[in-house]
Amino acid sequence: MTTLELPVPAEAGFQQAHETLMRSLAPRRVYYAWTDAPFGKVFLARTERGVCRVSFRRTEEDLVDDLEKRELLPARAHDELDPVFRQLEEYFEGKRRRFQLPVDLRGVTPFQRKVLEAASGIPFGEVARYTDVAGRIGHPKAQRAVGNALGKNPVAIVIPCHRVVASGGRLGGYTGGLDIKQTLMAIESIQAKEN
Image 1 (cartoon, rainbow, N blue to C red):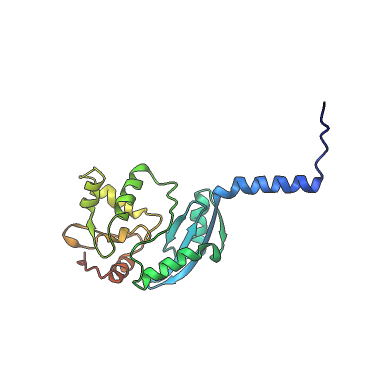
Image 2 (cartoon, one colour):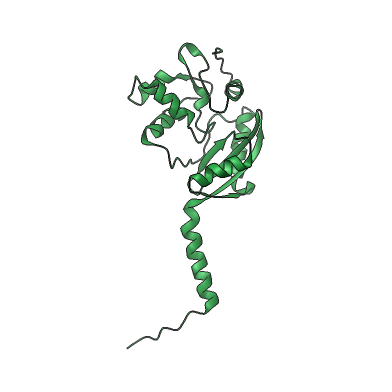
């Protein structure tokens, strides 16, 4: 017995094609928005995998450029980031000690991933030195490489690279600026020496 295939109506065919296209683009879609923080504006972005950017960029255009260079498809959507905003606000108020958010670290190197995983284990209110982090990842002499990897942390605050300090307890560096690092440390009652 043979079956007769009936043509798909044009409208249904368009709908199927549209749904297929949207599913194929989903992994590249990224939602972004911003909020006010104790130190100014902070931009956030998340993909279907999790938070992929916490940025102190000065303009929306800078953030969109950065996301597009990573071959993502940015769309401004504050509602899509509500859980992230809520946890961030709780952190700024001193009510949240640990973020419970999935993160999307796509695009970081295996070395950066190890460094970021080690930094994420530093408890609220405590610090580790660059040498400590280097030791934790099995590269005890790689303090400078650790600093460079932390400087490229795509999800600052969520992965607390601000809790990593230089030898002797000095502040060290911070891509967002030392004023932001000091503000984040003050939220956690961390005392650090000036550089």
